[in-house]
Length: 319
Image (tube, rainbow, N blue to C red; front, side, top):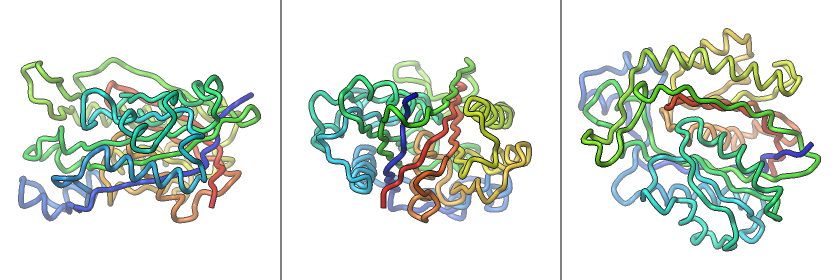
C-alpha cells in the first residue's frame, strides 16, 4: 500500500474584511438573515492590486517552509481553481517560476469547483510515485469576487476570496487516501457561464437545489470514506468539511452523530471560498495546534458540477 501524509500547510486571505453590515448597505438584506441561513458573519474580498497568484504564492511559501521542503524536492504543483489570473497558462505554471521549482515538475490547474482541492490531492498521490520526487505542493485558491454579481443579494453574501496550500509526502508504506469522488451532471444548478456564451460570467445558483444535494452528498461521502478505510467515526480525529453553509454542516454532523468539537469550521469569518475552503481550514487548525502527527483528518468537498470528493489524510505535520 502507498499513500500520502500531510506535512505542511499554508494560507492567505485578502486584507479587506467585508462584514454583513457592509453588505446591508449595498443590497436588501440583514445581518440576522445572513447569519441564520448561512452562518456567515464576514468574508475577505480582494482589493485592486491583490491577485490570485499572489495569494497562492504566500500560501505555498508558508506551507513549504513549515514542511521543511525546498523547491528542488517538489515533484508536482497542482492548483485547484476556476478563477485564476489567466485562462491559460495556469497559476501552477506561474508558481513554478516564482518558487523556483524544477522544470520537470508536473504543474497544472484543476477545476472541480469546491471539491477541487481533494481531486488535486488524489491526483498528486498518483503522480508522485512515477515522478521520482516524493513531495507535492497542492493548493486550492479562488478570487470569487471576480465572478460574483455584487448586487445579487442571494449570492454576494456567500462568497469570499483566499488560498490554502498543503505540502504532501508520498510513501510506499503510507496509508491510502481511501478517496471517493463523483459527479452528477447538473451544470444549471450552480455554474459560471464562460466567455463568449452571451451570458454574464457570474455565479448562477439554484440555492434550494444545491442545499438538497449537499445535505445528501456530505454524509454519504463521509460514510463511504469510512467504509473504505474500515474505520468507525470515533477513530477519526478531525472532520474537515467544505465551508459552504453552516446549516448543511450542522445537519450532516447530526445525521452522522459526530462530536461537534471534531468538526470545527471557519465559515463565520471566511464565507464560502470554494476550492480554497478545505485547505484554508486545514491551515487554521494546524496553526491552532489542532492537527498533530499520527492523527487522521477526514476531508470532504462538494459543489458545482455537481461534484463531490472525500479523502482520509494521515497527518505528519512538522513543527
